[in-house]
Length: 226
Image 1 (cartoon, rainbow, N blue to C red):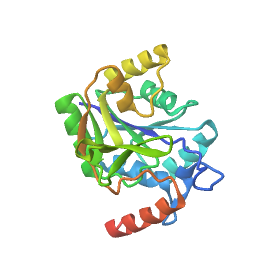
Image 2: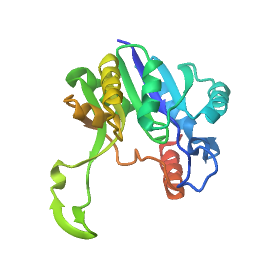
Image 3: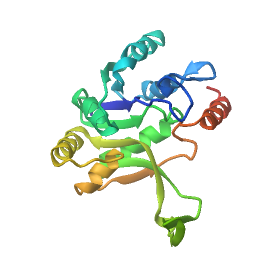
Image 4: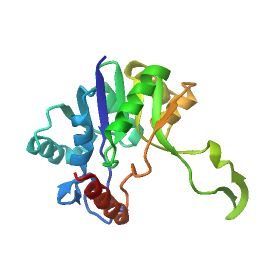
């Protein structure tokens, strides 16, 4: 069974206060995207990696791939105007049976999370890494609390998200034809009736979005000895 990781790395870095793609910002003096690619490069079950990034970032991303000698990166391709279109561009260039779609800014992903998503995709047909909500959740109407959501059945969904390649590709095509816009690939799967299994995740698998997140990432990586 061939497995390809599609890393979506088109972040603009606005909330980081940066003037460039946030995946190129340093964590312990090494580019964020390095840690993301490394997690999939080291996983023995991943055969290929496709990186999707902005048109103006392709060269810099390619330089990073070459600098660190990543062998599994098949190609670096241009993204679209939305994350959904960027994923589609990645899927076009992915081959094999299963694709694992991952945010380039989730640089703290672990081998266990990758393996969990693969195992659950094989067993159930599709999977997404997630963790149970720890906080009390409220629905809000007009700026005021209107109700309490049962957190026992509520999860924070992360990436990786794993699918059989041909199936998720067909759903992306259908979504494009229907004009359906989703915030992640699970949302496309849900919309068209594909059940997605929640895979075991970690609370530190955060999406690095703000300067505070970068500080957390440094502490996590130092603790892991990376």
